Amino acid sequence: LRQGMNETLRFSTIQRIATRTRSTTTHNNHSKRTFFPALALLQVYSSTAFQYSPTTSFQNHHHRGLSFPLKSSFQRETKFFSTRSSKTALFDIQRLALSKTPTPLALFSTITNSGDTEDIHNNSNTDNHFPEDEDNMTDSASTPKIPSAPFAYLSKDSKFLDLSSLEQVLSESNEQRQLAYDLGNQIKAALLKCRASLEQHQTAEQKKELQDSLKALVQQALEFSKQHSKEGSRMGNLNNHLGDYLRHQAYEHFIQTGTLLSPAAAADNNDDDGATSFTDEEYLSGILSFVNFDLKRYVIGRGTHRDASSVKLARDMVATLLDHLLQYDFRNGPLRRKYDGVKYTLKTCETVLYELSVTGCQEAMAAEQQDSSNSEPPSKRSKSESGGKSKSSSASLTPSSFMNVEALEALRLRMVEKDELREKLIKKCRDGQKAAKQAIYALHRNDFDGAAKLIDQCEQCILEELAPIADQEPNLRYGSFANVLEEYAEAKLYQAWLVGKDDDGDDTIMKEDDGDGSNAKKHNIPAKVVLLPNDFSKIRLEPQEYLGGLCDLTGEIGRYAVKKATIRDKENVKNCLETNMSIFYAMESLGRIPGNIGKKIDPLRRTVEKQERMLYELSLVEATGRNTIVAGVDATADE
Image (cartoon, rainbow, N blue to C red):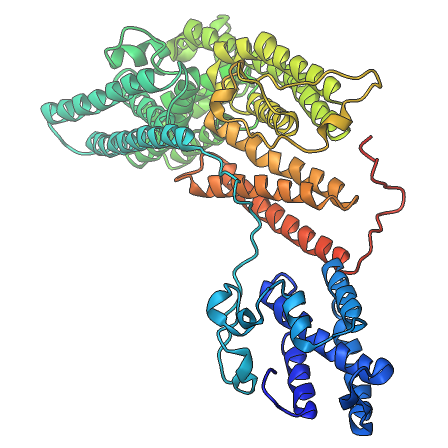
């Protein structure tokens, strides 16, 4: 443009620059340094030639006629840019156009904020320049364009959430859990060998060697549970394998004695110092699995050998056990399903006895005649025989003949007590969870004092009412109590994110009121403090409970972002996005996410994407120059 080209070629060059940079985003500094000077020259030449004509060169009719399409092109190009910065630049262009010396070089030097016009034509002195030289615009179509850097959603001083301490805890827990799985697999392999030995003709020494190896593994599993788990709980799937071990023990005990294995006998067989080594659930699971699978196969096998007496003995023991199990109140779960299978095992025993009798088996026919002489079903016959109403040979077979009634009754009472504790815990959990939820709602309403009281109420409920029950029965920690702890963690995290925390613990800073009944004016900008697991000093959280509350926190921050976007508070929307992106990257950096936390990762990712879209829509509103908000919402909505 500095060279002595004619006016028509100069206008054409300016229009080419304007068209080329029209679609470039306004965030690119190079576009501002190129597009605005081009429009400046375009407006100077067109408006001067049309109205003011300060130079003799524009008196020519040809140049004056050329100014009309150029001025239309200028209006078309500038219509795309409506931001405040472009309006300010165009105002400077108009001011310079009316000055005494509106030369093109003066406009270039002023609009680009450069004291020397040589810098404009020197690409090496400008960081945000296109690779090609502006003096050679005709070759721009053949030169590849370099895309701009991604939009920086995170500020330079933003910090990522550091969960390194939690990651170490999770890593150690995963290693211990893997050891538990490996030990369980060893018990499973040893069990298969022992079961096969019962149906094979092996020597007593071989069977004893297999039994000793199995007992050593079970003893190792019990010691492992005492060291790495709370009393009554198992790590990994050890509880299933220990239940299978008791199932095998019950099968052997029935073959040797014809009776049901008692809890004390199970502990004695393992050479342990008490009957509390196995939990009540593991014992019941093993006994019911033995009846549903092993005893049913045993009945079919003895029926094949036409051994009606063994089938009848198994039938009577199953009927006696079913009478006892009818007193239990099994809730929906594995034990309930196994209990339902006992009825089908009893039906299988009766069917085999009947089929043996109709095929000429004398023992089966005698058993059928004895059953027909009593109108009561087999499951009720033991009670009538214990009253002395029958003089048959089976009259002496009372419930105590098949099982230890006192031990099983004590087990039933313990199960009833556990159910009562569970029901009590569930009812108390409703109060704690309700207080935590209401605290979150209060924080959204900027009622910080009310939220603090509700969080204290939730803490009191957890410490005084729920935690003692969970300590008494560790298995009750997982379920309703864990949900309360997650909700409490979410409320505590959201409170700290809004108002910060002090240095003495996890108590958040609540600023004093000025007497107007509201602290909202002092909390227009969130503190952006994310509590770490060690910050929960009053109530210790498991990693799964903390991570669950942390993921739920992003949803509350997303609601806060929507609230700020309705009043066009772009800065706070960016603060929300920075926090959620920090949490998302921290969750992605964890090696293995425990429990059911993995299903919360996708909603977390969608929350981040929604907030990025929210920023984009706010930029569109800002580009239009409008500052309208939703009807009924104003800038003082928080107040």
